Length: 177
Image (cartoon, rainbow, N blue to C red; front, side):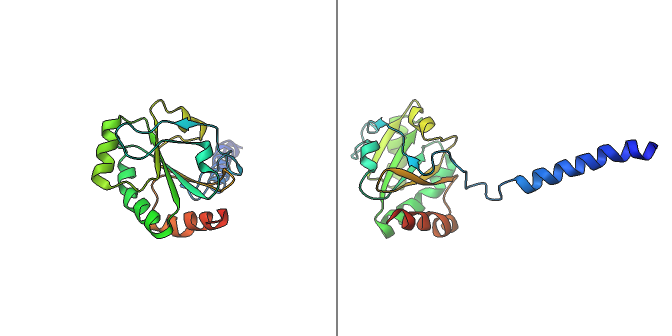
């Protein structure tokens, strides 16, 4: 009888661990978003002060597929993915929009002056309100929006060559690029 009292909690713990292990999403960079297959939130972002590219709004995302990338100068992974965004823009010509997340304009300008600016437009989201509406909980995050303004894909974390090849490019193709 004593063995039952010892074994029962241990078996329950093993069962609980097994349930959690099998229910974890295997790809931490592919976060299911409630916004997938829904229209992009209504927003209007002013440009980053001192940059030669405009800000953008929801209407800017209509007409052709686009990529929306949320970044910040203080974000180390954003620095890592930046050359890949430049290559993506050069190779595909996709409309690339940046949401500059909680960043001082002078820092954003310095970041882009150093690394280059692949963005067609960059909106300054100083108060993080638009990022919250997009469901962003960290930077970088990247979205694909189809020509009707519907979010069709979300990638959390820095893009990698593999993620671009196996996830982002197929999502862009599906969106009509």
